Length: 435
Image (cartoon, rainbow, N blue to C red; front, side, top):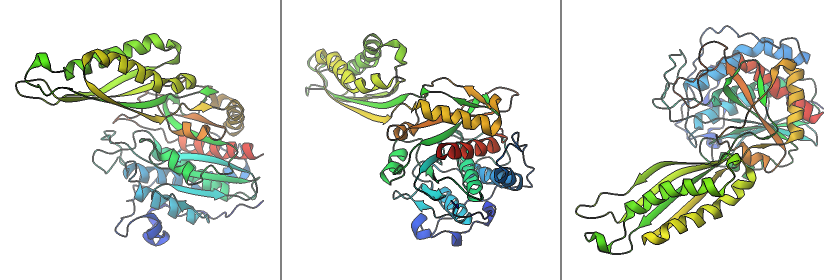
């Protein structure tokens, strides 16, 4: 079956508003992303010659373009729900490959397919940035004050663009590959927007990569079963039940009530939940507005609740409500508890993970496949694997020299040799899943 197109794409500096239907992508006054491209020397492609031939040829001719896309995205980060220019750039490039992308109904994020046939697999990249000021000193560092790609989503997006262009250059494909450029991963809801727009309709399996500065470049960490944690958001609001704010002996003590829950809920969860589940509650805010000559009338407590066990995650809302009610009953306050289910556990399907491991070995060599551990981090890829089988892996980005660093940090850096590795892995797993 023939893919949709095999044309190569111009570098991002050549993408102009004329390449994109602005009404469908962004307001008329949106300015395209400023290019961050210098005279690039392509990084080494450690798997050059491993095939297929058309993939080797495409990367040999276009690896600098993948690097330029990544650097342009890196220099022009956009926060979740505001990825307008990023979406415009992705749409323009995909159209340059001869593909037919569509923007999500929410206004940012893109769906696109390459290939034909009844069978379909999906590849996903997230496109949003973080409210973190960059301090890497890179020549293509963020130009947006207080915003950066400190989680590597620029890398994910450039890799998926490269995979799209490479697949579009293939002489034939065994089916359809759906490309999901997802907005708002850093804020719950982006994956749900993709699903609501039909992004998983007809999809047999889904795969994704995420940068990991703990893994050396050239290797990809895989794991069957849970690989991230579920993350919920808690907000407890309490209020005094009497009007005697200046008569301490007649008024419920809001501050005391907040303190009881802040210390008591983590302690009780530690006794009621299997400690092997990795369940952790962390408070981020406790506030009771100051009241002159008396006790505050109301207060709020906010935090995040994480667990690595899908079964425990299903039990937590009822358990938290029970414990909070029991703790606050003697205090005499009124309270309201909001328990928001932000993201579920990414629970990798064993068959999809085995398929991914084989594809990585075929693409890069057996040495490239390594194991990874379950993290306490949240990732909304978990919503996808609740609908279709899939696997989510960790792409090594550490250069092998100096400290590993970490995600979500101002100093986060990526060894760009990860770009061709990621493109090869995504192409190979799509072909293997369709084969």
